[in-house]
Length: 319
Image 1 (tube, helix red, strand yellow):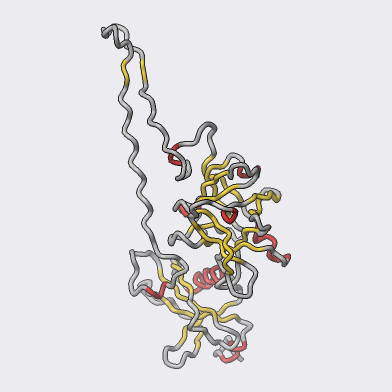
Image 2 (cartoon, helix red, strand yellow):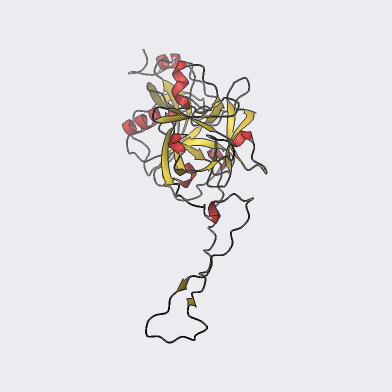
């Protein structure tokens, strides 16, 4: 709890150098590299009468919640969501367990907040689970970055829970009369008028979830710098599951080498060959020329160099 002792707003950074992110759909929780986004900030609320236990509230006023819904059927991990329960219960309560300069966030059931890696659908997902494999022990460790320090004294009205009573208006500010200025004997002090309350902050515009398919849109919602890269990962024989949603990111580079490095980072694979797929027969062809001009969008398939299908490729890949 020491890492959160003076924290009012925090960012939580995972082992994958990504931040715990409240998705724009106000329901899902993911990981994202954009730590400057307000969606990566979480307000800390101490649970009354429960020492060492806290709640984390997103920018949408919804709590980080350890749901009982399986992330995938047959797997042990369960979904972590944003919810707004009428009466907060143990599913929105987390106990920080310090581990050196990092923390593990434990649920009341003994599970830990876990930042997943690997291939989709695991990549960038967040679940709660008990890690069994040594290789994934670090996935429950989080760096705690304090964005706003908790100041001593009563909390402001705008940071109080919705169920609390509204604060009374501030008393008029009194100041002594200036020397040399005559006042009526019955009014030795002048009261300044109470300043008008600040206008309420506009609610963030609701956006679509990052988990929704980008193929649902026929045109971008706003002008985006860079090139849209749609990619899928082929199996050992070069087959692609068209029923599974592909991945999309914006690429700002200018050549194939930069694109390869970016895809290695996005897919979490080192030995990849970038291929195009024929719309006629589905045959894969390695891409080794310049990228299309004018930042045209690309639809590509990634093949691992160790795959059997590579042997069917022309020189210098195949035999």
